[in-house]
Length: 114
Length: 111
Image (cartoon, rainbow over all chains, first blue to last red; front, side):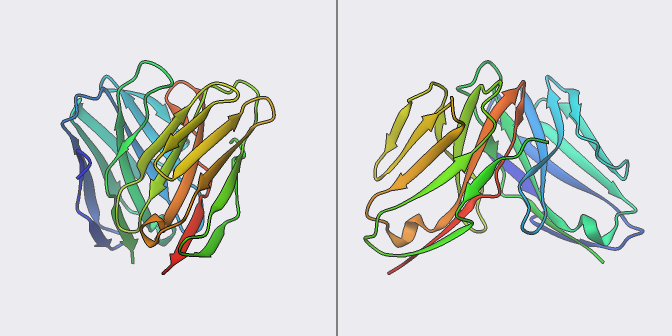
């Protein structure tokens, strides 16, 4: 375990469903991130939260809605997704303060939209 | 969107072989570079953080070099072992809180 926990590990949902992905970290980090990895593509940054405020929204469709209620928890709410949204969704956290910091990643949620 | 290129995309070597792969990135406004190791069904794990031109880092049999002027980094693995099989990602940092990831080099080490 890395200290960043994601649930569920696998999720299959229909296009009309509403579901949420959860990420939790107890590393004392003050920034949290959602990344998406589609097949044969690099990791794509979706959202960044710093000190519980969203500081980055990388042109992500509104059917993805993040929520950061506190510095330890991050959610990604999903609704009316498309089959092309099927991907691995990774959560990460970091302690800001300079180039020496890096990400601690969770194991990801493998999402399949049917 | 920044273009971060990693080559080769995949690599198959025999146990005991030494290998290396490349990460190329735009050198303008470069701030730092991270290398990550990502085993199947696990989380990406940070290997190295590099900031200065000419930096060399080493961790066991794995080492990395950085050239910030020309925008590239090399990762070397000496005497590859099956447990080194993973995807190796590089991620240069330019702006606050934003790493740009390459597609990775997938390494398979055969016993």
